[in-house]
Length: 304
Image (tube, rainbow, N blue to C red):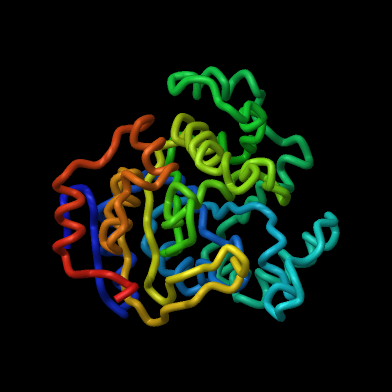
C-alpha cells in the first residue's frame, strides 16, 4: 500500500522488506542505522537480514555504544558500565547473543561503531561539516560538527537509511522513530547533556544531529514493527518497555519527517504537539493535511 509519500506493508512474510525498500530507491552504498539503543527492544537480527537481503549493492551497519544494551540491563541489574573495555565487551556480547554477528558475516557487511571512530579521532574536519550543514543555520550543540566518522563520510554519495524501531514513548518524545533514531549517532555513551534537565534540550539535540546527517547524506527512513514494537514506556522505568509481538508492519519513505508524522497520527498522536517533530518540520519541510488524514483513516495501528 501507499499513502502519498509513505509506503506501508503488512505481512509476516520476509518479502515485506523488499516491497518497502523497492519504493525507497536506495542508491548504494547504503549506510544502515538500526536502533540498538537497548537490549529490551532493538532492531532484531532477522530484520537486519531481511533488509540486507533486499539491498542490491554495498552496505554498512552503524551504531554507537550504549549502556542499556548490556547483559546487566537484560537481567534487570542496571544499565551497565561506562568504562571503555566494558562497553566493548558488552557490544561483542550483544552482537554474538543476538546473532547480529552471523548476519553481518553472511552478507559481508562491515559494522562501523561511531563511538570507536570518534575515540580514535577518525572523523571529518569540523569546518568541513560546518560548511556543509550551514544551510540550516548554526547548531546549538556545535560539537556535533566534529563527530562524523570519516568512514561514513566516504560513502556520502549513497543513501543513509534510518532503520528505526516502532516505539511509542513517554513525553516529550511521544514517538521514537526515524528522526529520534539518529540521536544514536551522537557517539556517547553519555548523552545526558543533550537531554538537559527534565529533557528540556532533547528536541534541540535530536534536531541538531539530524541537521548534520540530513545535510551530509541522502537520508531516508523505515519504521520497523515486523517482529516487535514498543507500545509504552514510563519515564521511571524507561529501559523496560511493554512489547507488542508479531506485528507484521513495516513503513518507509524518502521523507523522514512525513513518515514519522504519519506514524504518530496513526496512533492518535498530533505531530504538531511533538516538539522535535515540529522543529524538524520547520527546518526540513513538514507534512500536509492529506498525510494526517490518511494516517487516521488507514485503520492501521499497533496500540489498538
